[in-house]
Image (tube, rainbow, N blue to C red; front, side, top):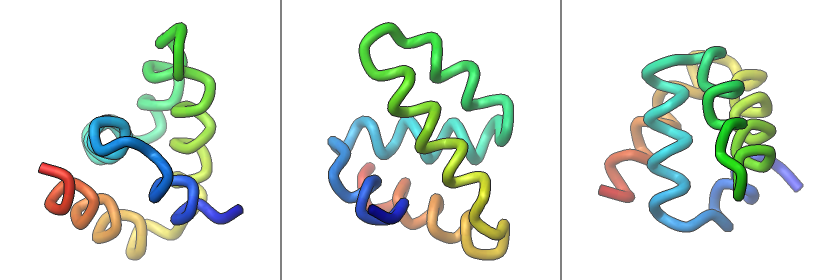
Length: 70
């Protein structure tokens, strides 16, 4: 399953959390999100996958996620 499909399956609040975390902290967001006992591992893995996407694609994608889920 691709990153877009994984993001699409998340709740609105999870999408926002991940998008804002990556936009604000980049690579540092994965270990920070991993601290969540409930969904940390899942969110951290999604962040790592997002960081593999080219920046020219990732940044507009995350911006769109934030706008669509506010």
